[in-house]
Amino acid sequence: MNLTKRDVLELRRRLTKNGCSFSRMAGCYVGGNRTIITKFAQPFLDLEDDAFYKYLEIAKKVLSGTPGGNLLELSMAENENTAEIRQFLIALKESKLKNDGMLDRFYELVIEHYNYAGNYLILLFHDVYDVPSRAEDHAKLDESEEVYEYLLCALCPVELSKPGLSYHEDDNSFAPLVRDWVVGLPEIGFVYPAFSNRSADLSSVMYFVKPGKDSQHDLMRHVLGCAVQRTASEEKNAFQNLVTEAFGTEKEQAENAFLQIQKNLNELVATRDEDGLPPIELTAEAVSDVMVDVAMPQEAKEQIVRDYQSTFADALPCAQNLIDNKLVQAGLQREATLALTSKIESLEQQLAEKNEQTADSDLPWDETSPAIVLQVSADKAEHIEAQVIDGRRCLVIPLDEGDSARINGVAAPL
Image (cartoon, rainbow, N blue to C red; front, side, top):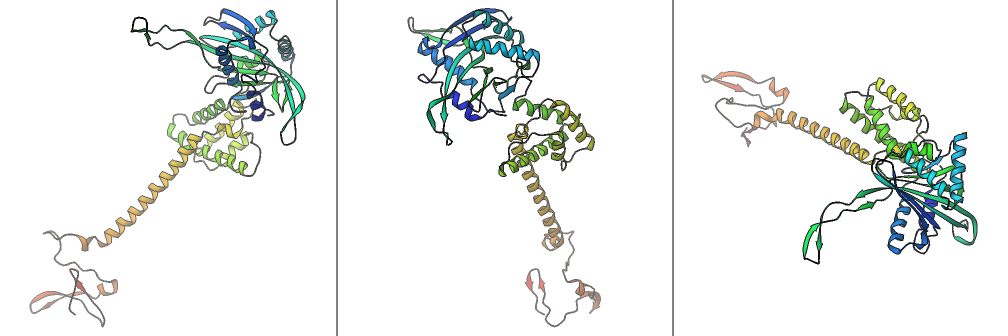
């Protein structure tokens, strides 16, 4: 991946009142039945301040996220259809959004391939950025390095505002709030061409997906001509699903195995980070290695490897993308709890054994208790015998020089 966070931030930092250089904006409002409600186009800098900042907020959102996470660098496939799409996008960019026919064609493509049930707004921004030269220490120099011309697109949901009550000052009363259709922040967006290594890359697209939303593979293929790519969240979910499915109905066993796999993956990534190594693309063989010490049936391991190969055949995920930090912490907490429980059980067993050895001397006397309880060393016990002395049966304990004894805790006179 060539796209870096530094590239994204360089574009994003320009989107301010004084730094923004968007020349023009165009839009198309689409209804839930895929019909066009209205279209518009105008110079961006002519907007009133309130509208200017709202639209700027939408554009900035497309330039957010984590590269490789929910901000993807899509590569255009090498085929005849892709070449046609690329030429169209380049022509749309060079038209500076002033060609109504090209705009209509773009809107039609999006409407056909964007899978969204409600109303939404298609927004396009055109910009030209004189990329300044930078010294080796990244300090900005005065002269321009190149001119980067690009399109930024945002697909925003349009939803009714929430119902409520509002205060009417004229008659000093409260009444139901008039609900309006409100434009939300984008769920999908892209920048073409991608800004990669501070330069335009005509063969790739910078693609934004709002966390938790569908990445819209049809848009990638048919509107942008790009190979399909999952977000980090989608890769994580796909991996968890194939692990769970390998265990069938054994849900608890699947959960335990997945927690252990998460721990092993986390250790793998941490080791590479400590060694300063780049992120690792996780092959099926690497997945097999990660599961070596995981307690699970061999057939489940084999199925996971097979399913992994087929699920991620087009693009291998980065190991980091498959890690759920919450699950890693949950697994570590579970291990600590199990270790503590085991230690407590061991101590309780030891205490029980010790109590059993001394239980008789500590028991309270009752009618069922023996009248005499002796605790002597093994070599002394074998010499104890019963004798009749003065007509009474007695226990006779031989005493050696230096022996001592206690009766009910009190030293006995010997």
